[in-house]
Length: 159
Image (cartoon, rainbow, N blue to C red; front, top):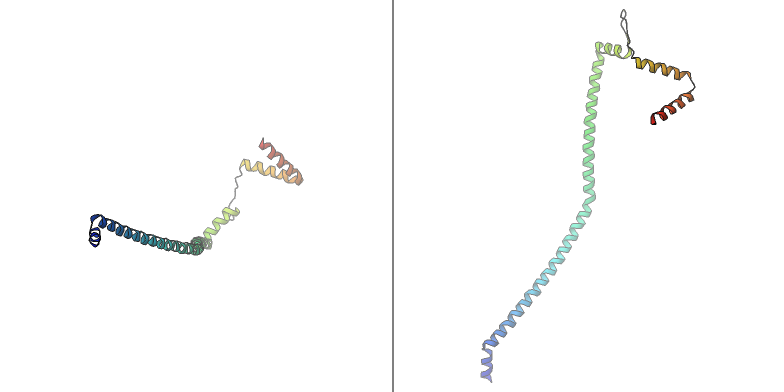
């Protein structure tokens, strides 16, 4: 029997069977390692995703505030620049009013003043004169009549 066991041990069939079992054991061990590695990576990935989400949530409000404040600062700079331009315009206007010729020109134009010895004329538009006449007539009547006339005019314009 000892001879037969030796023959069996060295037979091709036995060797192939042993080789298949060893290969199967190696494949099983490598699959177990891969699965263990996958499960570890999956856990690590989940932890990393959780940390990243926590960071995004924690930083969302401060970043929004930062962007909002930057927009406010830009708006305030624009307002300041406009105010500086307005101040410059007012300084120019003040300097012009210091000039007697400019002041005289504005007084003549706005207040219709004339120098001694000059004759002043005011040209009145015919439509404006009629409007003035209508306004005078409206002031001679009681106020409630004017209100009703306005209502009647508004009603007539809708039709």
